[in-house]
Amino acid sequence: MNIEFLRLFIVYHYKVNSKIYKLSLVKILMDAELAEVLGIFAADGSMQDDHLCMWGNINEDREYYDKIVCPLFSKVFNKKIIAHDKKSNSVCGFYLCDRNAINLVKEFGFCKRKTYVVRVPEIIIKSNDLIIFAAFIRGFFDCDGFISFLKRKGNYKPFKTKYHTYPRIAVKIASKNMVEDLSYMLNKLGIKHTKGIQKSKENNLSDIYWIEIRGIERTEKYLLEVGFNNPAQHSKYLVWKKFGFCPPRTSKKQRELILSDKLDPYLFYAHDRI
Image (tube, rainbow, N blue to C red):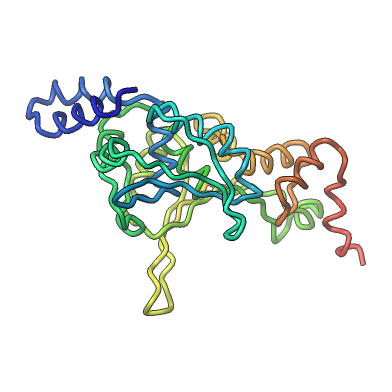
């Protein structure tokens, strides 16, 4: 992809008054791979004057970076990108020192200090393309979201109250605009969810905005329409599908052992038998 050509097209897109031209340019510019890259960057990316960078957990996200993030960024920005470890910070990731890449990210509306103001690029929202919506959501949730499983409380069968059987996919962020944009796209995809705000009790801390997709039917709908590309997240889902529950606070390595029948998931509840 010639990213300087793409950047110039985006600049032109925002200057053209004709709605017909705008719609045609959106279709020319946007594809699912680019949308997923933008979702990933919106969640975990950082921009400085001379570089872009991406960092993930050195243990949980390394496979995701090697197999998904780096190949996607390499293709979109036409640069060979390889993740490296920063063991002092327990992260892996990369720097992308490329002026065209920085300019392109800016044209999509991203800025240096994006934590509280980041939102879905307008060109994605206006595409009204469900494949594009799903790709951006997948990139964002793979990095900033999570899937977890809860014990049920109340009048449920003992298995559901003892083990973590109830699925929940969620994201918690500081940008109200991003939550509103994600909610809009989830609605378009037919994925039922709830959203809200967690008010800060400290004056020096910001409010947190959240989206939750709860329950088996809604979780399966998310997996069907969006899915996970991050093995750290997907492995939790696979354990749940195989055993009907997924123990909390397990590592990706432990879940891989569970899935290969080399680790008994019931051992994580051994203390409950005492």
